[in-house]
Length: 94
Image (cartoon, rainbow, N blue to C red; front, side, top):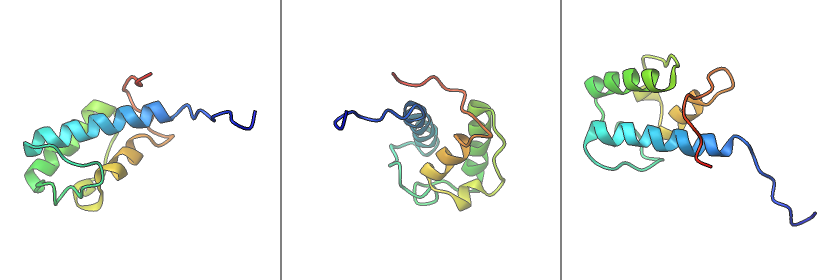
């Protein structure tokens, strides 16, 4: 049993959410972005930030703070969306 791998059931959700988040951001800025790239460095401004917020809320069924683009990196948005209070509405990759 010592070589048994612990499977975390939330892991597939994180992978799916991260892919969705990066896809939305990449489409908005017109290029591929890295998971840890700051949103402002990726090219988001206040107008595209408002669009990002709107798309994320629609995609995941959550309410995000108005300042999400200025406060967060992509993984931090993923964390907000996947919090226990806001389970994501995406199918996990399994």
